[in-house]
Length: 545
Image (cartoon, rainbow, N blue to C red; front, side):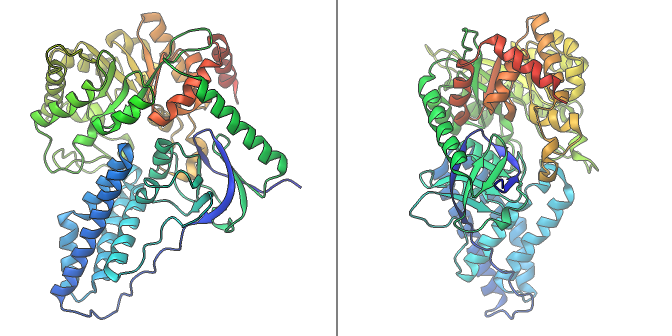
């Protein structure tokens, strides 16, 4: 009889075995009809103090976590400190609610708004639920359920994991993560990937995993095997030994076994991510997400603020390539100072470059001017970074030519675009005839090619960058780049998968950008395969039914 196998969406390529330890049950909902113990002002004071305590704890964890995890936690802290949330709480305590009930209802109001918005915003509902639970716990003095204490390593199983928990996991104890909810771009997946923890998310049946049960979590296969056989346990142990040996033997620039260079770069959101990128031996930055400068603010960052933020990242990689993505906002990433109106389908709405071709063009022009200034601010005797700039959500050669002309008008020399809309891949020859390079964003390209919202865990089987339809679009783009002598890279999550990285190189991709924690494993995979072997793997992947 075969071992019971649960399936979900794998994050990473490692496997781990160990006993299950489950997250504690969530706190119960505060009673709706409970009488307030104090005056309305006293209840408001308790609620405000609880929200402040939650924000302080999140900021404390952000300082410990660093990098991308810190940005997620700081964003959560800002949500807890939102003045409009405090106003909603005040209205409820004035109506006689207890502090904990007022906080619960106020978060519930925002939860409904996000859930109804769909896409990226709906995927943040779990973050609000976590904030509400923490605030209720702080208001009542209850302990917040979190990661269990254990003297021995374990596999952590939960309905979902909050960023505050994932970001500070003790990697000496947590062998792997298994969650019942979440998709490949949920915060659990993002943070697990950034910390190098094997995970399988969106697992049906995870709720039935018993405390202490032995399991094997195989991120590469997206499986959780319950009560594994001795043979499977031995196989997992051997995989771990082989993986460590390969990682230990791979150093220096990325290249195939026959010496073909493949630049391995890091995805970053700001200067705080640079230490991890440099420690991993990143050969530059393949995706600098500049939107972190703009989020959670009522006004756009000033020209001076932008120059300093860009200069700090450029200074970290003197003489090396730093690829900056201009502001990717609008639709499912709304900004208060960028009013674009309501949209019935945000994923297909006004976002990326589309948001700046009309009355809001000035925001993009300020950003391009700040990037040019940051490149010039390297300082006397300092070697400047090789600044490349690209625009998101480009549809075709017309979009490309417009952006390239605009950017070059500000003195930016190497200007490209992201290929994340299928039309851009289908028009890759025209796109690359106008641009200096292209970078394929596999997350969105997969979403649009397969018509599957990448935030929905139940559509996990369709959120597959290995799908032949997606790979054929990558192949088209790679072929156009080879014909025109234009470099083509990948900066989506697919670049962090060592097996898929080989396929991408076989399809003509010359650079891969990923979370720093994934670089060593991708470097090792490339070093073990020739370019011809990568091409053979690509051909096989394209033939997959």
